[in-house]
Length: 234
Image (tube, rainbow, N blue to C red; front, side, top):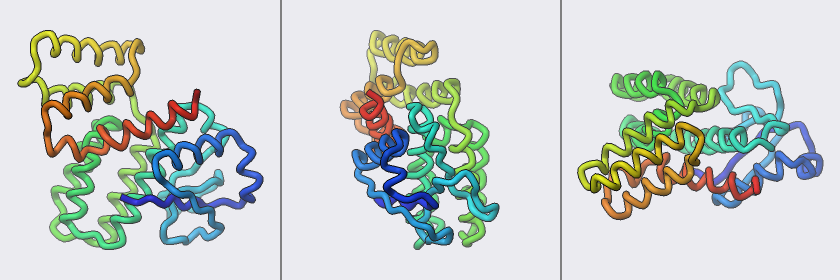
């Protein structure tokens, strides 16, 4: 996956560095192994996001409101948008149908966690592609970034966690099944964190390996992202 986040801005770097929201964004990205490059080129080929409120109509690029990044959920969602945009940039450099299917499979449960409707629509869109063209890839990019930009709901997250729970159900004892069910329900009720639930699922994945799940961004990269946000929000 990509490790460069290119951001368009009119602002001077020294003006950005004093802003708490930008500091948290930088700290999170650096902890995840990403480098940031600021540019004033709107047509930069690796552009991932804008630090301006206005976005040209012909671009589907995340727009970053620095004032909102001091809030943990907004920061996490921004990071998901930027990293996804960077990964899509990398995909677009040499994409074919096989690579798109692999990319989409990698993002499957993250997409589900953000939008059940988007999950079905994007899955159907990819399945119907006979030959991947640049215009189809742009459409896929727009749909994926649009659904992420809207943010997730607790109900969508819970539905996704229950889907993942199903992979481990055949291996778990009755007591462990109940504990995992209660853990997910407590997250739904606001008594438990998403980080904790994902950590437990990853613990089970280590005990009961599943190659498909081990490549899911939702279980691996997304958990690291949430941990990075928690670290800079202390």
